[in-house]
Length: 399
Ligand code: ADP
Ligand code: MG
Image 1 (spheres, rainbow, N blue to C red):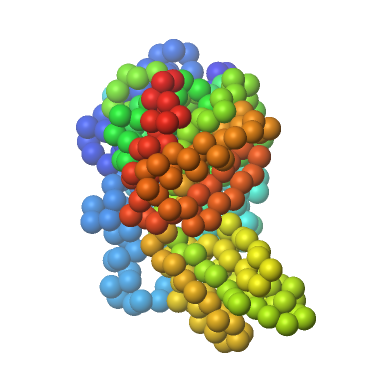
Image 2: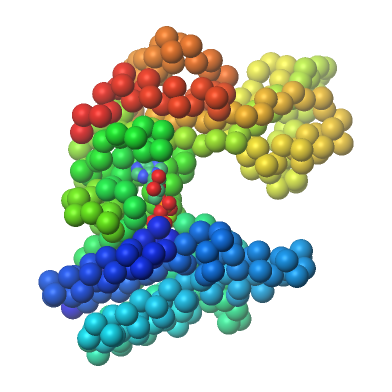
């Protein structure tokens, strides 16, 4: 049995036009001899009747507090509705189909409501339906915990449902359908003519996704990589070839750019006295106790600095103040990352980026680097300019 997993995101299933295109793609795969397993997201965004955020608003209008377990049960409904709509459409077009919740599809998770991790997938239920010649439609973004509670996997979780199913079922490929022609060398909202990549390695797309490229969820890439299943990112609405995500892809020094916005930079200091080192440790522990995740940590003789999500700013400042530290904050920052598996060991990339940013008049507040990524903290107001200048200086339009 040749299995293909096809995932249709919220952007694809929101409209009847998108759903018709999705159905066409499923029927086409079946015609090519594949057994399709289809993963769907909820239909549309906040305001539309069955969107996840609309469901949350519905209950929050009654009571502001909702238990995580009930919240998960509620927000799992959007995807379930989509499965029934898709299965019914397929059946009416003459193709036997069955709609399954994540739990019915054998997806077992831990009990971490709102951000559950898949621990195991039993392939038997899906395989049973496939062997009966049915197209299986699975609700994305959800599973069931050991005690039988419905759990959800967090934003972007349907991508993970698709790749984890692909790995568990031994699929030939996982196709992620969305509203763009593939993975682009930078965010198309900031570089409207961004080039589409023919292929990209798991490692690079995973890093791009962690650094803010929303086109696929990083956890989904990890699941595919562990299961050695290739991913294809394709456009529901066009016949573009799309982007192949696989293991052996030629390395480029710079593959692409990604960014995160709404970031605050916190600087704690001046720290003085014999116990400076201990004070830095206590600052880090203070953030950990407040459950604030920090990044781009830098240490100077008399200070320590790092970045946090902007939403955590007041919580962080309060915790530091309570612990007796004075700090400065720079809100409205963005983290711009340059990613490329071929930059490892290539000297001068950091200098080249700094030079381009300097010529464009962009002030760099802080930098950090890892093996395949260098990141720059800049003001959010400079982001579009910075991305466009790097896109040009590194010739990212030529793929
Ligand atoms: P879906 O509902 O299909 O999951 P998403 O909105 O989650 O769709 O992801 C697709 C979006 O990701 C695109 O519309 C695009 O604006 C955005 N995006 C950000 N960075 C990139 C990139 N490097 N390549 C392609 N798309 C990107
Ligand atoms: Mg998505």
